Image (tube, rainbow, N blue to C red; front, side, top):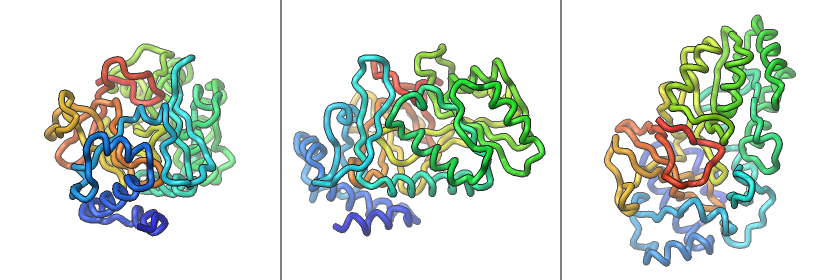
Length: 329
């Protein structure tokens, strides 16, 4: 298998049969080239030639990214992403072989759900991420800001009053304003510096990061809707170990791009799949993760509905606090 050819095919997926075919190709490539993943699969007694569908592919626990270098072959890595965590906590490390693959993934995904970044002024409120190095979220948003080609786009740390004035000053501008932020910072701004704008879109990237009391999603979104005068709040589902994102445009129901899929494992038996509508552990297939591992069992809890949309309802007990998906609901 030529991974470069597959890398381009990933973003041309049109149908379920394309996804199924490429999933098996990527699985066999990663089994052959990724030592950590191969040892995990072999410990389960998995024989690649006996795997005939992506539902039969082993999903590696996300915790492996904490203690192992999860890369394929002798690929040189040019970029490192590292998860957030509390002091003294072991964090995940995602070594990136091809940064352009990540850019292609998140830019195509943004176009799919929101359109051209040039239609937006992108204002990012990301304290807790900006202060540390190796944040995949900051890397993504930095590129989206550049793609927006707006002198008004930019990052904000704790200067929420300045951000309020910026949004007020764009009232008569024809572009949409995308206010993107971590949940606790958006909530702080909602309480202290509420602001309205006729073309405002609010997107939360999840997580109180221990800064505030956790809220159910509906409560958080209602507070943000009232403060910012929007009818819906968008959400992003992503993590350090992935190179793709799912987005919710309303009601906390997420959709994936064509090269990403969510499967729900049974909470009591991870080898079994939960039926539609039942809560279980979230497994992710991210084919853009071509040079690391595309098949990851997360510590998130969620459910998938029949049309393929999914929701996140919390995390397993005693799982690490993470920068995303800490809300319960």
